Each structure stands twice: as structure tokens, then as C-alpha cells.
Image (cartoon, rainbow, N blue to C red; front, side, top):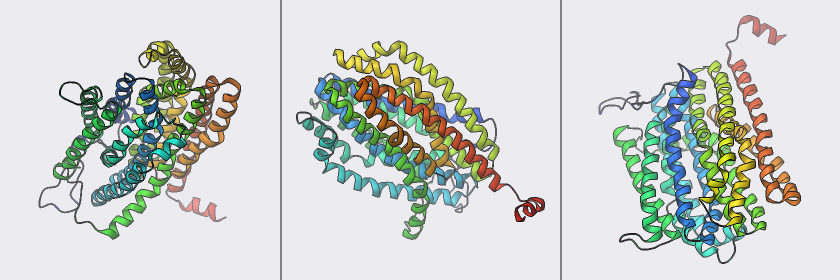
Length: 475
């Protein structure tokens, strides 16, 4: 779609330059063209957490443990934004596949208002519940002030994180991942520059320690949001006026049809993480610090899978809208092969490099051993975890989010928590990490079978009916 002129009608094409038509051509090429800039952007964004962790680790073990305790809560709110983005991406991609350009613009506009409304409520609730939340997560009294210093700024500016996330999900639905990749890289560079200045008080800046890490991220996100929305409104004409409540309500219903289950699916992960951290905390502050650092390394290791899951939803949405069911089936096979090969390669690298990586985060023996142990056992299941992410995104893309939520519930409640509890009793930290790997592999197998059968069923139901097939059904 190209940006409309001043005199164009509402039906003028609005596809941004550089967008990708996902309904034709080579499937691996289409996914690669979108996933590579996404991977670069995600890699840059992941440095937010890794850079924060590395700089904060210089403040001591308590500061590192405090940052580790914040991770599940941060991921919980991020998962909310991911769910809203998934709902937005699904409805926008299907409308784009049908070339319904006015609906595309209305859905994007209404998604922004919905995200702002929900995020404001979450930010206020989180800001005034900090001590209660982290007391429940098992944070010790001496760590709570450090957590409060970080999270009060994070909750105050959470809207500047969620709004761009949903906006960029809409861009991906239109086939444009390049702009998002550029924004994410620029934000990461800004964070890398500001972190040491505000954490350690370099140059003319005050030493704010862990509070400085939160303020640095907030500054970067505020600037990025205003630049992104200027681009959306002035250059791409993707926002419509005036605000109409009745239209918004209808759009919100369509977005939340996918968005609410997608939120649930994504929120299960940080909720699960909070439970696992509470269990790991039984083994001491050093174990928590090591576990938190290991999960940040894991996030970096899963970048290719995050990028794939970010683009496969729009791919499935556009092809469903265009009625290309054969491409829906073929993309599942392509992604499964990719996840298997790349997942095992990542696992082998982390196996060989686990101790050098661990020493980047701490000099404390127990912290190093915890990180190395995690990177020994859990990465062998990354291929299956990648399949789960791709399958969940595919279900969202075709407008069927409930199976993805059920898959995540099965992974966490049916498998992960019971096995972690038992294995922790028997083998301690080693048992916890083995349990995570087992849950990933079993649920990855289930997820792949489910999506393949679902696509086959949707294809059969959408096939044109011949007189002969109608007569067979009637008998």
C-alpha cells in the first residue's frame, strides 16, 4: 500500500513502501525477508535486558538479585502488549489480505486507543502495588528498596513501551518489518549510551545506580514513541480521524477476540517464571541471581525463534484472508525444520560456552554454577520451544487463539509446575532445569500436530462445494 494523497478517498491504497506481499512467492524467502530485520531488531532490544544486567551486576549481588526479581513482572506486562499486538496483527493482516484498506486504517487507529487505555490502568495499579507484588514473589526485605527504585520508573512510563509495540505489530501485519528493526536498533543504542551515564554517574550525570537503568530505558522509549507515531500519522497516513466510539467498540471486540487469549498465552510465561523463581529462591540469593542471568542469556539465544514467531502470524493472516491454504500448511513444515536445525545448533554452542558466558555476569561461584547448569540442560529443548512459539503465532494469525492458550496452559500447569516441584525435591536446581527441558519437548510435539490438523480442517471447510460433495453430505 502507498500513502494516500491529500485528495484521495478512503479506499486509496495505504501499503507502506518496503512492505512485503506474503500471499505469493517463495515461503522461505518471504519469511527470511521479514525475519532478518526482525532478528536484528530483537537482538538489539534484548540488549536492554543484557546491558542492564551487566551494568547492574557491577553494583553487587543484591542489585543483580533485585533486577532478577523484576523480570517476571516486566515480562507479564510485555506479554499483555504482545497479546494486544497479536490481536491487532491478526485482524489487520486478514484485512490486508482482502485488500480492505479502510478497515486496515480503522483497526490500527482503534488498536492504539485500546492499548493506551489498558496500559494506563495497568501502570497505575502496578505503581501502587509494588511492595505487595514483590513480597509475594519472595523478595527479601533488604532487596525491596532496590526493586522499588527500578520499578516505580518502569510502571510510570509503561505506556511508552506498549504503544510502540502494538504499532509495530500492525506494521508487521502489512508485511513491513524493516522499520521496526531500525527502531529497535536505535533504541538499544540509546540505552547502551545512557545506562552507564545514569547508573554509575559518568561525566556530568548523577550516580542513580539501579534507578538509573530504569530512567535510561524510559528516556529512550519516550523519544522512540513520538518519532514512531509521527511516522505513522504524517508519513504513512495509518491513523484516521475523528474518534468514533461505536466504531472503536467494534474494532476492540475484533482485536480482543484474538488479543485476550493471546494475552493469556503470553502471560502464562512470566507467571510461570515467577513461580519458578519462587522455587529457585529456596536455594538462596545467589541461585536467583544466576537463574535471572541465565534467562537473559536464553532470551538472546531464542532471538531467531522470536523473529520467526513475529512474522509467521502476519504470514498466516494474509494467506488466510487470500484463501491460500496450501501456503498455510507448507509454512508449518518449513518452520519446524528451521526450529529443529537452528535449535540444536544453539544448544551445542551454549553447551561449549556456558562457563565463559557465566563468568561475564559474576565472580561468585554459586552464581556461575547456576548459570552454567541452566545452559547445560535447558537449551536442548529450544527447538521444541521454538515450534511452540511459531505454532501459537500461527493460531493467532488465522484467528483461532484458543488452541495456543491451551498449549501454553498444558506446558505450564499440567507439565512444568508438577514436574519442577517433584524434580526440585529429588535433585534441587538440576531437577528444576531438567523439568523445564522435558516440558518444552513434550508440548512442542503436541503443538505441531495440533496446528497441522487445524489447518487441514480449515482448508476442508473452506473448499468450494461441488454438487457431488453436497449430495454425499446430505446422505
